[in-house]
Length: 82
Image (cartoon, rainbow, N blue to C red; front, side, top):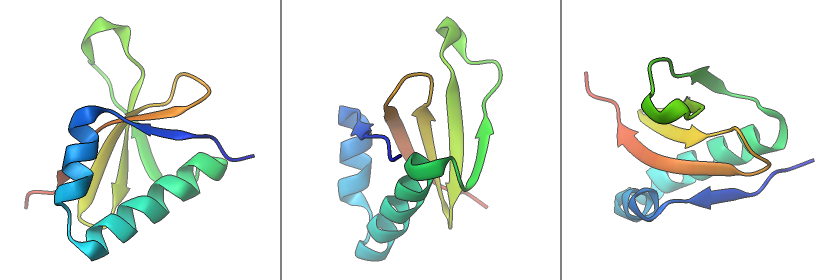
């Protein structure tokens, strides 16, 4: 069963700024995670306000999202810095 993926305004802006290949990678990574919690994800510790945030690694991108409800809510997309 696949869950819906929602983008916050800032995350949608981040997604639009990616290259075509970057958007494809992020889209595929989120689709795999939403359909079965597959991928290189990690629960983030020390997040304020009790949010259950996770990080998903997709190539050189990091996707921060809330996985606590029935939908995956993407908060931000960041490029990995060396």
